Length: 386
Ligand code: NAD
Ligand code: UDP
Image 1 (cartoon, rainbow, N blue to C red):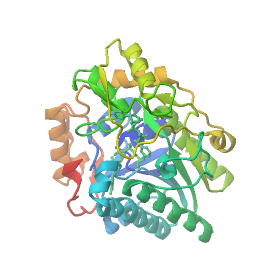
Image 2: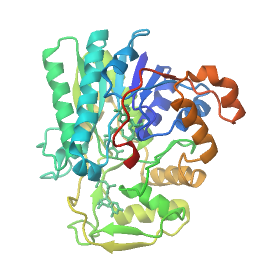
Image 3: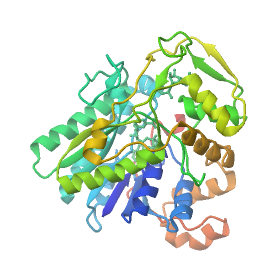
Image 4: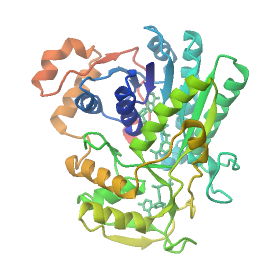
Protein backbone atom coordinates (compact mmCIF):
# COMPACT_ATOMS: atom_id res chain seq x y z
CA UNK A 1 0.00 0.00 0.00
CA UNK A 2 1.00 3.64 -0.51
CA UNK A 3 0.50 5.38 2.83
CA UNK A 4 0.67 9.01 3.92
CA UNK A 5 1.99 9.24 7.49
CA UNK A 6 1.18 12.61 9.07
CA UNK A 7 3.42 13.28 12.06
CA UNK A 8 5.65 10.41 10.94
CA UNK A 9 8.83 12.08 12.24
CA UNK A 10 7.54 12.01 15.83
CA UNK A 11 8.06 9.38 18.51
CA UNK A 12 5.26 6.92 17.71
CA UNK A 13 5.10 7.88 14.03
CA UNK A 14 8.76 7.10 13.37
CA UNK A 15 8.50 3.65 14.96
CA UNK A 16 5.34 2.96 13.00
CA UNK A 17 7.11 4.02 9.78
CA UNK A 18 9.81 1.44 10.55
CA UNK A 19 7.21 -1.32 10.92
CA UNK A 20 5.12 -0.26 7.91
CA UNK A 21 8.19 -0.07 5.66
CA UNK A 22 9.34 -3.48 6.87
CA UNK A 23 5.93 -4.87 5.86
CA UNK A 24 6.55 -3.58 2.36
CA UNK A 25 4.36 -0.48 2.36
CA UNK A 26 5.45 2.62 0.45
CA UNK A 27 5.52 5.62 2.81
CA UNK A 28 5.35 9.37 2.45
CA UNK A 29 5.81 11.35 5.67
CA UNK A 30 4.29 14.79 6.24
CA UNK A 31 5.48 16.66 9.31
CA UNK A 32 5.91 20.26 10.41
CA UNK A 33 8.78 19.28 12.76
CA UNK A 34 7.13 21.34 15.48
CA UNK A 35 8.04 18.59 17.95
CA UNK A 36 10.53 16.41 16.10
CA UNK A 37 13.89 16.49 14.37
CA UNK A 38 14.72 15.86 10.70
CA UNK A 39 17.52 13.66 12.02
CA UNK A 40 14.79 11.05 12.51
CA UNK A 41 14.63 10.66 8.72
CA UNK A 42 18.32 9.93 8.56
CA UNK A 43 17.99 7.35 11.33
CA UNK A 44 15.02 5.71 9.63
CA UNK A 45 17.13 5.54 6.50
CA UNK A 46 19.82 3.66 8.44
CA UNK A 47 17.29 1.21 9.88
CA UNK A 48 15.44 0.60 6.62
CA UNK A 49 18.23 1.00 4.09
CA UNK A 50 16.08 3.66 2.39
CA UNK A 51 15.07 7.08 3.67
CA UNK A 52 11.32 7.67 3.43
CA UNK A 53 10.19 10.62 1.37
CA UNK A 54 9.13 13.48 3.63
CA UNK A 55 7.29 16.75 3.04
CA UNK A 56 7.58 19.59 5.49
CA UNK A 57 3.95 20.55 5.92
CA UNK A 58 1.90 22.10 8.70
CA UNK A 59 -1.59 20.61 8.71
CA UNK A 60 -2.96 24.01 9.65
CA UNK A 61 -2.00 25.12 6.13
CA UNK A 62 -5.00 23.86 4.15
CA UNK A 63 -3.43 24.47 0.71
CA UNK A 64 -0.19 22.74 1.59
CA UNK A 65 -2.15 19.75 2.88
CA UNK A 66 -4.12 19.61 -0.36
CA UNK A 67 -0.94 19.58 -2.43
CA UNK A 68 0.30 16.50 -0.55
CA UNK A 69 -2.30 14.53 -2.48
CA UNK A 70 -1.20 15.82 -5.89
CA UNK A 71 1.00 12.79 -6.69
CA UNK A 72 0.07 9.12 -7.08
CA UNK A 73 -2.98 8.15 -5.03
CA UNK A 74 -2.58 7.10 -1.38
CA UNK A 75 -4.41 3.96 -0.26
CA UNK A 76 -4.64 5.20 3.32
CA UNK A 77 -3.50 7.84 5.81
CA UNK A 78 -2.09 7.29 9.30
CA UNK A 79 -2.50 10.46 11.34
CA UNK A 80 -0.19 11.09 14.32
CA UNK A 81 0.26 14.84 13.86
CA UNK A 82 -0.83 16.63 17.03
CA UNK A 83 0.47 18.64 19.95
CA UNK A 84 0.32 16.46 23.06
CA UNK A 85 1.49 18.32 26.18
CA UNK A 86 -1.37 18.37 28.69
CA UNK A 87 0.03 21.29 30.72
CA UNK A 88 0.65 23.41 27.64
CA UNK A 89 -2.85 22.64 26.38
CA UNK A 90 -4.26 24.20 29.57
CA UNK A 91 -2.14 27.32 28.99
CA UNK A 92 -3.00 27.53 25.24
CA UNK A 93 -6.24 25.72 24.57
CA UNK A 94 -6.93 27.50 21.27
CA UNK A 95 -3.51 26.59 19.89
CA UNK A 96 -4.34 22.95 20.65
CA UNK A 97 -7.79 23.16 19.10
CA UNK A 98 -6.33 24.86 16.02
CA UNK A 99 -3.47 22.43 15.55
CA UNK A 100 -5.18 19.18 16.50
CA UNK A 101 -8.78 19.74 15.40
CA UNK A 102 -8.46 22.22 12.51
CA UNK A 103 -5.37 20.38 11.23
CA UNK A 104 -7.36 17.15 11.13
CA UNK A 105 -10.28 18.83 9.35
CA UNK A 106 -7.88 20.05 6.65
CA UNK A 107 -6.52 16.54 6.29
CA UNK A 108 -10.01 15.02 6.05
CA UNK A 109 -11.02 17.61 3.41
CA UNK A 110 -7.91 16.88 1.36
CA UNK A 111 -8.54 13.13 1.66
CA UNK A 112 -12.12 13.58 0.45
CA UNK A 113 -11.01 15.77 -2.48
CA UNK A 114 -8.46 13.14 -3.49
CA UNK A 115 -10.86 10.23 -3.03
CA UNK A 116 -8.82 8.70 -0.18
CA UNK A 117 -11.23 7.19 2.34
CA UNK A 118 -9.14 5.16 4.79
CA UNK A 119 -7.68 6.64 8.01
CA UNK A 120 -5.96 5.39 11.16
CA UNK A 121 -6.09 8.05 13.87
CA UNK A 122 -3.96 8.38 17.04
CA UNK A 123 -6.32 8.84 19.92
CA UNK A 124 -5.60 8.40 23.59
CA UNK A 125 -6.80 6.80 26.81
CA UNK A 126 -7.06 10.39 28.01
CA UNK A 127 -10.62 10.33 26.56
CA UNK A 128 -11.63 8.13 29.54
CA UNK A 129 -10.53 10.78 32.08
CA UNK A 130 -10.76 9.22 35.57
CA UNK A 131 -12.50 5.93 34.73
CA UNK A 132 -15.16 4.47 37.03
CA UNK A 133 -13.49 1.07 36.96
CA UNK A 134 -10.53 -0.81 35.49
CA UNK A 135 -9.75 -2.44 33.14
CA UNK A 136 -11.20 0.17 30.80
CA UNK A 137 -13.27 -1.03 27.85
CA UNK A 138 -13.99 1.03 24.75
CA UNK A 139 -17.61 1.53 25.85
CA UNK A 140 -16.60 3.18 29.15
CA UNK A 141 -17.95 6.73 29.66
CA UNK A 142 -15.90 9.41 27.91
CA UNK A 143 -14.99 12.44 29.98
CA UNK A 144 -12.01 14.67 29.31
CA UNK A 145 -10.20 16.77 31.88
CA UNK A 146 -8.05 19.13 29.78
CA UNK A 147 -7.97 20.81 26.34
CA UNK A 148 -5.58 18.20 24.92
CA UNK A 149 -8.05 15.47 25.85
CA UNK A 150 -10.87 17.57 24.42
CA UNK A 151 -9.01 17.88 21.11
CA UNK A 152 -8.67 14.08 20.92
CA UNK A 153 -12.30 13.43 21.83
CA UNK A 154 -13.68 16.04 19.41
CA UNK A 155 -11.48 14.71 16.62
CA UNK A 156 -12.62 11.15 17.29
CA UNK A 157 -16.24 12.32 17.16
CA UNK A 158 -15.72 14.20 13.88
CA UNK A 159 -14.15 11.11 12.37
CA UNK A 160 -16.97 8.88 13.66
CA UNK A 161 -19.61 11.20 12.16
CA UNK A 162 -17.78 11.13 8.86
CA UNK A 163 -17.70 7.31 8.94
CA UNK A 164 -21.43 7.31 9.62
CA UNK A 165 -22.45 9.74 6.90
CA UNK A 166 -19.90 9.27 4.12
CA UNK A 167 -20.38 5.81 2.61
CA UNK A 168 -16.81 5.81 1.24
CA UNK A 169 -15.05 6.68 4.47
CA UNK A 170 -13.63 4.21 7.03
CA UNK A 171 -11.44 4.93 10.04
CA UNK A 172 -9.87 3.20 13.01
CA UNK A 173 -9.43 5.32 16.14
CA UNK A 174 -6.66 3.83 18.25
CA UNK A 175 -6.74 4.79 21.93
CA UNK A 176 -3.19 4.42 23.21
CA UNK A 177 -2.50 3.90 26.89
CA UNK A 178 1.10 4.81 27.93
CA UNK A 179 3.60 4.35 25.08
CA UNK A 180 7.21 3.78 26.20
CA UNK A 181 10.33 2.06 24.89
CA UNK A 182 12.28 2.51 21.69
CA UNK A 183 13.34 0.71 18.52
CA UNK A 184 15.70 -2.19 19.40
CA UNK A 185 18.44 -0.58 17.28
CA UNK A 186 18.67 2.33 19.73
CA UNK A 187 18.63 4.72 16.73
CA UNK A 188 15.13 6.13 17.20
CA UNK A 189 13.27 6.78 20.43
CA UNK A 190 11.40 9.34 22.50
CA UNK A 191 13.06 12.75 22.68
CA UNK A 192 10.96 15.14 24.77
CA UNK A 193 12.02 18.76 24.52
CA UNK A 194 12.78 20.32 27.90
CA UNK A 195 11.86 18.66 31.17
CA UNK A 196 9.90 15.45 30.51
CA UNK A 197 6.36 15.45 31.88
CA UNK A 198 5.93 11.69 31.42
CA UNK A 199 7.35 9.11 33.77
CA UNK A 200 9.53 6.86 31.56
CA UNK A 201 11.60 9.61 29.89
CA UNK A 202 12.07 11.24 33.29
CA UNK A 203 13.36 7.98 34.79
CA UNK A 204 15.73 7.40 31.87
CA UNK A 205 17.09 10.96 32.05
CA UNK A 206 17.77 10.45 35.78
CA UNK A 207 19.52 7.14 35.03
CA UNK A 208 21.73 8.73 32.36
CA UNK A 209 22.64 11.60 34.68
CA UNK A 210 20.76 14.43 32.99
CA UNK A 211 18.47 14.89 36.02
CA UNK A 212 19.17 14.47 39.69
CA UNK A 213 16.17 12.59 40.96
CA UNK A 214 12.64 11.60 40.11
CA UNK A 215 9.72 13.25 41.89
CA UNK A 216 7.10 10.56 42.49
CA UNK A 217 3.72 12.24 42.47
CA UNK A 218 2.01 10.82 45.53
CA UNK A 219 2.68 7.80 47.74
CA UNK A 220 -0.82 7.54 49.16
CA UNK A 221 -2.89 6.46 46.17
CA UNK A 222 -5.19 3.46 46.76
CA UNK A 223 -2.88 1.17 44.73
CA UNK A 224 -0.55 -1.76 45.36
CA UNK A 225 2.27 0.42 46.77
CA UNK A 226 0.63 3.85 47.03
CA UNK A 227 2.00 5.14 43.71
CA UNK A 228 0.06 5.71 40.47
CA UNK A 229 -0.64 2.73 38.22
CA UNK A 230 -0.68 2.90 34.42
CA UNK A 231 -0.71 0.55 31.43
CA UNK A 232 2.70 1.00 29.77
CA UNK A 233 2.88 -0.33 26.22
CA UNK A 234 6.04 -0.87 24.17
CA UNK A 235 6.16 1.49 21.17
CA UNK A 236 7.10 -1.42 18.88
CA UNK A 237 3.92 -3.28 19.91
CA UNK A 238 2.02 -0.06 19.29
CA UNK A 239 3.63 0.38 15.88
CA UNK A 240 2.69 -3.18 14.92
CA UNK A 241 -0.91 -2.46 15.92
CA UNK A 242 -1.07 0.37 13.35
CA UNK A 243 -0.02 -1.96 10.56
CA UNK A 244 -2.61 -4.50 11.80
CA UNK A 245 -5.30 -1.80 11.99
CA UNK A 246 -4.60 -0.70 8.41
CA UNK A 247 -4.81 -4.26 7.17
CA UNK A 248 -8.01 -4.86 9.20
CA UNK A 249 -9.68 -1.74 7.79
CA UNK A 250 -8.87 -2.64 4.20
CA UNK A 251 -9.65 -6.33 4.60
CA UNK A 252 -12.91 -5.99 6.53
CA UNK A 253 -13.99 -2.67 4.98
CA UNK A 254 -15.14 -1.35 8.34
CA UNK A 255 -14.40 1.25 11.02
CA UNK A 256 -13.63 0.74 14.72
CA UNK A 257 -12.41 2.35 17.93
CA UNK A 258 -9.87 0.20 19.74
CA UNK A 259 -7.83 0.36 22.98
CA UNK A 260 -4.12 -0.38 22.73
CA UNK A 261 -2.61 -1.45 26.03
CA UNK A 262 -1.22 -4.56 27.67
CA UNK A 263 -4.11 -4.96 30.10
CA UNK A 264 -1.62 -4.88 32.98
CA UNK A 265 -1.13 -2.01 35.44
CA UNK A 266 2.36 -1.08 36.66
CA UNK A 267 3.04 1.30 39.53
CA UNK A 268 5.57 4.13 39.45
CA UNK A 269 7.84 2.30 41.87
CA UNK A 270 7.56 -0.97 39.95
CA UNK A 271 8.71 0.87 36.83
CA UNK A 272 11.59 2.50 38.72
CA UNK A 273 12.75 -0.92 39.98
CA UNK A 274 12.44 -2.48 36.51
CA UNK A 275 14.49 0.37 35.02
CA UNK A 276 17.19 -0.06 37.66
CA UNK A 277 17.40 -3.76 36.78
CA UNK A 278 17.59 -3.05 33.06
CA UNK A 279 20.14 -0.24 33.29
CA UNK A 280 22.23 -1.29 36.25
CA UNK A 281 21.91 2.33 37.40
CA UNK A 282 20.25 3.70 40.53
CA UNK A 283 17.26 5.95 40.00
CA UNK A 284 17.00 8.15 43.09
CA UNK A 285 13.49 9.35 43.82
CA UNK A 286 11.54 11.33 46.35
CA UNK A 287 7.81 11.06 47.02
CA UNK A 288 6.14 14.44 46.70
CA UNK A 289 2.54 15.71 46.58
CA UNK A 290 0.12 14.30 44.04
CA UNK A 291 0.09 16.01 40.63
CA UNK A 292 -3.04 18.06 39.99
CA UNK A 293 -5.47 16.15 37.78
CA UNK A 294 -3.77 12.76 38.27
CA UNK A 295 -5.75 9.57 38.79
CA UNK A 296 -4.88 6.46 40.80
CA UNK A 297 -5.10 3.62 38.36
CA UNK A 298 -5.76 3.27 34.62
CA UNK A 299 -5.23 0.18 32.51
CA UNK A 300 -6.86 -1.18 29.39
CA UNK A 301 -9.07 -4.04 28.53
CA UNK A 302 -7.30 -4.88 25.25
CA UNK A 303 -9.78 -7.64 24.32
CA UNK A 304 -11.23 -5.83 21.31
CA UNK A 305 -7.78 -5.39 19.74
CA UNK A 306 -7.30 -9.16 19.95
CA UNK A 307 -10.77 -9.86 18.61
CA UNK A 308 -10.67 -7.45 15.65
CA UNK A 309 -6.99 -7.13 14.81
CA UNK A 310 -5.61 -10.37 16.20
CA UNK A 311 -3.22 -8.09 18.08
CA UNK A 312 -1.91 -8.37 21.61
CA UNK A 313 1.08 -6.75 23.29
CA UNK A 314 4.10 -9.06 23.24
CA UNK A 315 6.80 -7.04 24.97
CA UNK A 316 6.85 -6.76 28.76
CA UNK A 317 8.17 -4.19 31.18
CA UNK A 318 11.74 -5.54 31.05
CA UNK A 319 11.91 -5.05 27.26
CA UNK A 320 10.34 -1.59 27.64
CA UNK A 321 13.08 -0.57 30.09
CA UNK A 322 15.95 -2.27 28.24
CA UNK A 323 15.03 -0.62 24.93
CA UNK A 324 14.45 2.79 26.54
CA UNK A 325 17.82 2.50 28.24
CA UNK A 326 19.64 1.50 25.03
CA UNK A 327 18.17 4.55 23.25
CA UNK A 328 18.96 6.88 26.16
CA UNK A 329 22.50 5.54 26.63
CA UNK A 330 23.29 5.78 22.91
CA UNK A 331 21.64 9.23 22.62
CA UNK A 332 22.00 10.93 26.00
CA UNK A 333 20.74 14.20 24.51
CA UNK A 334 18.21 12.67 22.16
CA UNK A 335 18.54 13.82 18.56
CA UNK A 336 20.41 16.98 19.55
CA UNK A 337 23.77 16.34 17.87
CA UNK A 338 24.55 20.02 17.37
CA UNK A 339 26.44 20.20 14.08
CA UNK A 340 24.44 17.58 12.14
CA UNK A 341 21.12 18.79 13.53
CA UNK A 342 21.79 22.40 12.66
CA UNK A 343 22.92 21.46 9.17
CA UNK A 344 19.81 19.37 8.50
CA UNK A 345 17.59 22.11 9.92
CA UNK A 346 19.38 24.66 7.75
CA UNK A 347 18.76 22.64 4.61
CA UNK A 348 15.10 22.22 5.54
CA UNK A 349 14.67 25.87 6.39
CA UNK A 350 16.19 26.91 3.07
CA UNK A 351 13.13 25.42 1.38
CA UNK A 352 14.99 23.41 -1.25
CA UNK A 353 14.45 19.81 -2.20
CA UNK A 354 17.16 17.96 -0.37
CA UNK A 355 17.83 15.76 -3.38
CA UNK A 356 19.38 18.90 -4.89
CA UNK A 357 21.55 19.36 -1.84
CA UNK A 358 23.13 15.95 -1.93
CA UNK A 359 26.81 16.97 -1.97
CA UNK A 360 26.41 19.38 0.92
CA UNK A 361 24.44 16.88 2.96
CA UNK A 362 26.98 14.14 2.36
CA UNK A 363 29.84 16.47 3.17
CA UNK A 364 28.29 17.10 6.55
CA UNK A 365 28.22 13.36 7.23
CA UNK A 366 24.48 13.37 6.87
CA UNK A 367 22.99 10.95 4.32
CA UNK A 368 20.60 12.43 1.79
CA UNK A 369 17.28 13.33 3.32
CA UNK A 370 14.47 13.18 0.82
CA UNK A 371 12.57 16.12 2.16
CA UNK A 372 10.72 18.34 -0.22
CA UNK A 373 8.91 21.50 0.73
CA UNK A 374 5.25 21.86 0.05
CA UNK A 375 3.84 25.38 0.45
CA UNK A 376 5.30 26.74 3.65
CA UNK A 377 2.69 27.50 6.30
CA UNK A 378 2.73 30.41 8.71
CA UNK A 379 5.28 30.24 11.53
CA UNK A 380 4.02 27.91 14.25
CA UNK A 381 3.08 29.94 17.31
CA UNK A 382 3.82 27.24 19.86
CA UNK A 383 6.91 25.70 18.29
CA UNK A 384 9.41 27.42 20.51
CA UNK A 385 7.70 26.48 23.75
CA UNK A 386 7.69 22.74 23.25
P1 NAD B 1 5.26 13.52 18.85
O1 NAD B 1 5.12 14.95 19.25
O2 NAD B 1 6.56 12.87 19.04
O3 NAD B 1 4.82 13.33 17.33
C1 NAD B 1 3.84 14.14 16.71
C2 NAD B 1 4.42 14.60 15.38
O4 NAD B 1 3.44 15.41 14.73
C3 NAD B 1 5.68 15.46 15.54
O5 NAD B 1 6.65 15.02 14.64
C4 NAD B 1 5.20 16.88 15.22
O6 NAD B 1 6.22 17.66 14.66
C5 NAD B 1 4.06 16.60 14.24
N1 NAD B 1 3.05 17.64 14.18
C6 NAD B 1 2.37 18.21 15.22
N2 NAD B 1 1.51 19.13 14.75
C7 NAD B 1 1.63 19.14 13.40
C8 NAD B 1 1.01 19.85 12.36
N3 NAD B 1 0.10 20.80 12.60
N4 NAD B 1 1.36 19.58 11.09
C9 NAD B 1 2.27 18.64 10.81
N5 NAD B 1 2.92 17.94 11.75
C10 NAD B 1 2.60 18.18 13.03
O7 NAD B 1 4.11 12.73 19.63
P2 NAD B 1 3.89 11.16 19.78
O8 NAD B 1 4.15 10.80 21.19
O9 NAD B 1 4.59 10.45 18.70
O10 NAD B 1 2.33 11.10 19.57
C11 NAD B 1 1.76 10.82 18.31
C12 NAD B 1 0.26 10.86 18.43
O11 NAD B 1 -0.16 9.95 19.43
C13 NAD B 1 -0.28 12.23 18.83
O12 NAD B 1 -1.47 12.46 18.12
C14 NAD B 1 -0.58 12.06 20.31
O13 NAD B 1 -1.64 12.90 20.72
C15 NAD B 1 -1.00 10.60 20.38
N6 NAD B 1 -0.77 9.98 21.68
C16 NAD B 1 0.47 10.02 22.25
C17 NAD B 1 0.67 9.46 23.50
C18 NAD B 1 2.02 9.49 24.17
O14 NAD B 1 2.09 9.32 25.40
N7 NAD B 1 3.12 9.71 23.45
C19 NAD B 1 -0.40 8.83 24.17
C20 NAD B 1 -1.64 8.81 23.56
C21 NAD B 1 -1.81 9.39 22.31
N1 UDP C 1 4.72 10.39 37.47
C1 UDP C 1 5.58 10.65 38.50
N2 UDP C 1 6.63 11.50 38.27
C2 UDP C 1 6.86 12.08 37.07
C3 UDP C 1 5.97 11.81 36.01
C4 UDP C 1 4.91 10.96 36.25
O1 UDP C 1 5.41 10.14 39.62
O2 UDP C 1 7.83 12.86 36.93
C5 UDP C 1 3.61 9.46 37.69
C6 UDP C 1 2.22 10.04 37.45
O3 UDP C 1 1.72 10.61 38.64
C7 UDP C 1 1.43 8.79 37.01
C8 UDP C 1 2.49 7.95 36.28
O4 UDP C 1 3.75 8.41 36.74
O5 UDP C 1 1.00 8.06 38.15
C9 UDP C 1 2.43 8.09 34.76
O6 UDP C 1 2.49 9.48 34.45
P1 UDP C 1 2.59 9.98 32.92
O7 UDP C 1 2.55 11.46 32.96
O8 UDP C 1 3.75 9.32 32.28
O9 UDP C 1 1.29 9.37 32.24
P2 UDP C 1 -0.27 9.75 32.44
O10 UDP C 1 -0.44 10.18 33.88
O11 UDP C 1 -0.55 10.83 31.50
O12 UDP C 1 -1.00 8.49 32.16
